[in-house]
Length: 75
Ligand SMILES: [Zn+2]
Image (cartoon, rainbow, N blue to C red; front, side):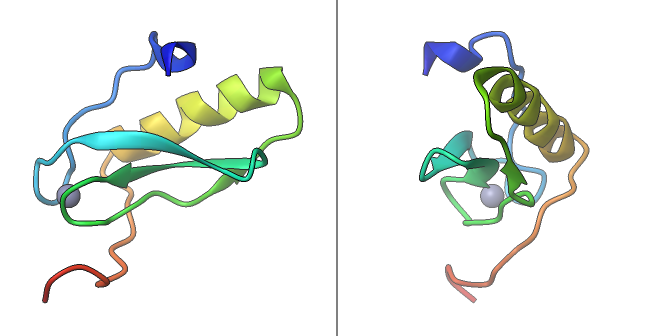
């Protein structure tokens, strides 16, 4: 994951758990919480440049607290 070493991810805005940049099938990115399962919207990319830009954008959404809670974990 050293590709994203310069991207600052804060703790989960909901539970303060650890956030992780996830990549889906090599075409989109999102940030997900390892504890409560909330996540940002998915951002698609089609090139390495777009991939880095998308990673920075999902990190920014995450850091602003713009996350979706699926309710899949717990309550
Ligand atoms: Zn969380």
